[in-house]
Amino acid sequence: MAWIFFFVSVLAIVWLGVLLRRRRREHRESEQAREMAFLLAHGELPGGQVVRGDAATPRAMDGERSHDVVPPVAPLVEMVAVPESARPAYLDAVRATAYQRLKAALPAYEIFPRASLRRAAGLEAIEKDALLDFVVCTRALIPVAAVDLARGERSSPGDAFKRETLEAAGVRYARWPHDALPPSASIAHWVAD
Image (tube, helix red, strand yellow):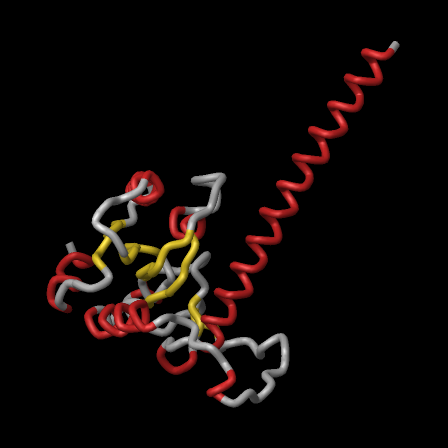
């Protein structure tokens, strides 16, 4: 009789573990969705337009106006005015420099800092998420490239995992030294290839 109780207890613990993991994943995805919505609502899309990635057509990607281009939605929360000196910068100086270089080299693309590997590779592609320094997307918000800034000479197993996952999804991956970014022409050529 004791073995039945033990078996039921183990099943209950396993079920709770699975439930907790699913809730963490859903929470993480909702946080990422809120961050992307914020970036889209306050981003630098031309004319304040938002392009839906799930219904993008070649016409919308070519810059022509189509039914896939919708006006931005109102923010969900009212923005509170906080003095700039009281707020920390979203990116540190190294990443801000890299972001500016990417924006200058790729004016026809959208650049998302501090992006999710799961979002760039597709939600179904991987179970475990990782952070990418930058993801480069088309105007239709389709990822085409990802960039990480390396602080050391050696690459980690995580870098290899990111490279394999992104290559399987058809997204280019680069790991650049943080203190020796490639010139703008090289970046544009790398993405265009």
